[in-house]
Length: 251
Image (tube, rainbow, N blue to C red):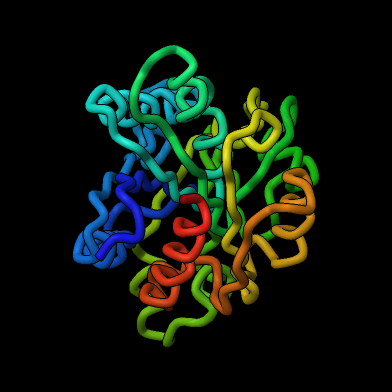
């Protein structure tokens, strides 16, 4: 049974298709959590010019506004680059802001799962030191993961066969997702957040996750999960337990 009455909205990161999340979403729904997944326009797009951060933010807000119009309480689970998107999508949509306007429902919590917390005025590429990491390949207006390196970067706690399978379930992301500065910090605007640290992550290393989380102050709720960058694939039930623990703390 669900620990609270939230609808879960998943905001994924770069490169990874919806197929990678289907199993975990089934676990959430079986436990009683209505779940929505936002397909980022920057993922796998072919129409030029490619979509950018604003398009991803708009897609998340469309999903949120549909739920909030029904008075729903929403918990956002964001992963990797999805932390940037989710942060910028929640402005004015949190429960406290809506209550002040006499409205029901709202975003009651954001769960950052090995996700970027980016200061206002900074971009993803800024957080990476100004250029793509060695395991990323820049292709004009898009970025992809190096297929020779992805298995050990993103899926290092999966069996070799599974590493190959999920490495193929990747596509490009638009460069605009990486170069556009963030304009909102939920943690600086009294929106409840928590962090699920993935301690074995080779894509967004644990110390980097910890350093970013310091922006939220010393009282940040968190849990350490022994997992790689994609725990929804490698340890989905342990991820569910960690996530539910954080959602209980938000009640």
